[in-house]
Length: 249
Image (cartoon, rainbow, N blue to C red; front, side):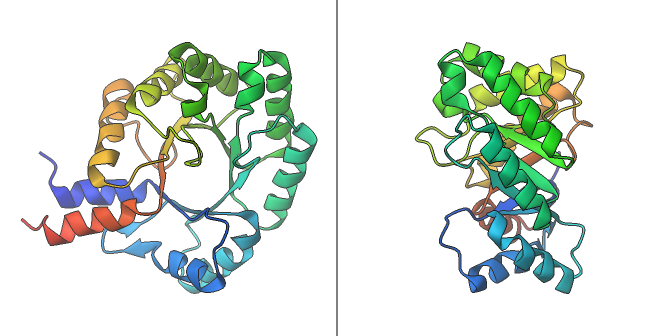
């Protein structure tokens, strides 16, 4: 059985260390970057609002952590059906150094039956985004299994690199039920699209639930930073505490 230190290292390697409060200071961003590598290894990405990307890039370079991805959010958290606005945001984020874009799916328009318009929105954003594109479905707002599955299929069809559960700003965050549907869609497509669990993940036990789902549905060898991420901030604290306070052999 994999010991707790191995599990901790696995989780950290898949983590998008995130700060999206909208009130971050220069010092807070600096401290966030300083946590990108620690006793359990290196995170996959730092995820912040676009305006913080130049500072993150400089801070990571100063720490010799250029391998850490620079992730940001677009159409966040509103999820409006505004292709021109989102394309503009994507281009601005790229100019600021983004290497990954987490894009909020226009879930309200989709639920209103505007499937064709939602597809065209995703097409425009995909065309504007040459880097990894993670589509945030906001599954808590989509609600039903059928809606989550249909949204997942549409996002995959229109070129998403990842399906992501939620913004963390709605009342319902990531759930194992929603993750199962998303992973099943990904599996049906041959596993080419990744999965990101985000919203409400605070503990190592939370993370292990989603890893177990991915291992069961996709196979143990599928999970890697190229195919699986966690989006969280406090998760890192709990993982390190579990690994080194109570996890020593």
